[in-house]
Length: 307
Image (tube, rainbow, N blue to C red; front, side, top):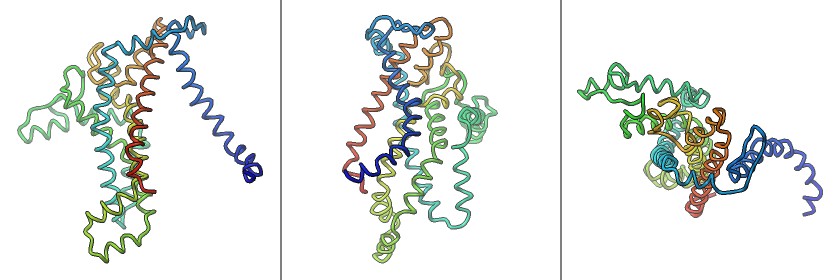
């Protein structure tokens, strides 16, 4: 307590710039979105709120398209997040064992992290072109398989094909950050554990499951939580692959929860300012949903994480 009274002002000065930035660009928008969601007649053109009510929440929760979008997003999360963590962890272990060209391979895997998401999605749309001359379809033709409609108008794309493309995109796009975190964690593990295991004649698989993975559990938890949050916010990847509507016409076959929010947000400029309240309500519902999933994840892994 005495130390805080003595040096607390220094900490306050050091934290003030970041707290101000967070307050303006993070906390205020969240609070403002929550407020707007409770005023169905809110008009941003005149900054008029109208009457308080839960009408916007009723419209969102009663809209089958919202539940379809949330279900599609959840399916993407369930498929892509565990796979991306497993692949990035495997690549990290291999990279850590390589002495030569480690920096080169780190650069290769880091490139997607600094590449624009839309541009990266267009590259994938070219690779997974629905035309018979597309790269993937050409490979399938070599094995006697017919061409598959991987991308294009989502109404004509099989769900399994769309999920496959989105999953590959999400895994590759998220590898860089995960590899950097895992690589830093592995290099921070005390080498005496591995030396003791080597003396005992432990296999590489046993060393990984009994030493590396338990000591990496804090990083695994961190990556899992951030990956879940990032996957639930998926939007640009699906737009770059299947267009702004995420489907054919008004039916968004691969519409995500964030895509649903943007759909209503986009109608504000088209003479529907009251739709901002619906978009805000959908955003708050998604926020609460992610918060619950994150809380359950932390409770589940509380006894599995070793610091």
